Image (cartoon, rainbow, N blue to C red; front, side, top):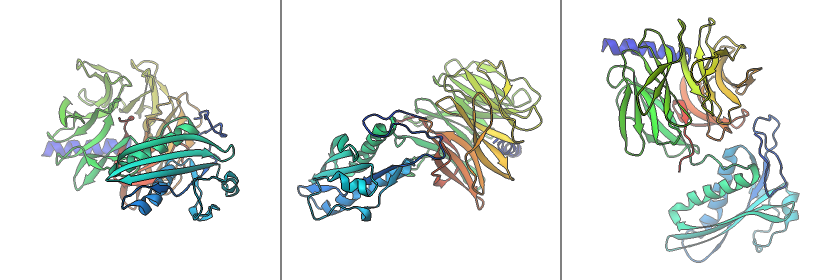
Length: 434
């Protein structure tokens, strides 16, 4: 027990220390720049759905579908939803006849309309996205399934809208792993981008932390004290089995997986100092990358697997460094700020997110992978730490601490649309999950 407490103190101290533009097809819009602070949201109206056939949920579904579509569109941060009370269309008239000029008058560049039939717990839904300026259909889809599958139908069509107007699908089929602390123990859990579907991954009654997803989403790696030492484990999310990968005396801290899933970066103290290593998943071969008297931690891969960013205090304070994947050509990346930690490399490869102290609080920044002036994304009060990119590079998850409580939050990559998901910390965003 004494050994465990000592290592807990060391690890907690370490964590405290280091803790786009796309052309649009089929619409009048031609450009989305997720990094532009002045980005103008797409104005869109979602009309009440028309109904046909029998069923007991007709009136409720007529409003439920547009409400859910509006909610998920708003969640992306790319749309300005026109309120329903601003609609000029007479609800008593035939809603299948569209007067596009009426929708343009209230400022809607785009319009969603739909029709559904429900009978014997079977549901058929037709949804259409219109360009009101051109007066034409951009996307139309028909979905058939059980009544309890209507949420999945909504998400599928919202993804169609995103694909049509931004060139990329949404991240609704991703999860965020995070650490939930209860008393002296902590466990790994996951949650969806929409804040639903919370699931527990570990239940060890111990200190468990630092979750990292494999590139295919099949595995989550983490560090746990379940065996009274900070050991490194990998859990198979499909079979619910786990395997201890590194259990050297001292610190075995989970790092990022390589883009091909064949290697994992680790921070180990087995040689007396915290250094960065590469572990070959298949063979178990361990390669040491850093050789410094300073502390080297928090390694992450670039999107192409050719570079590694990490944190070191070799210059006197924690800063972000970049090196080749074989440990050569180390260069310092951050120079502004005296406490820069927790690097996360964008899947698009162009920027690295990290946390830095500003006015006594941690805030989230990004910097070009080549260096240069950093961009501050968060300015709110409280702590903002542990950034993690979404697999499309359009969002960041983070820990937000306010009033002494850690919470998992997400925001757009330009720093807008911050949204709290749940209590927790140290988020790690999954790849796209099928």
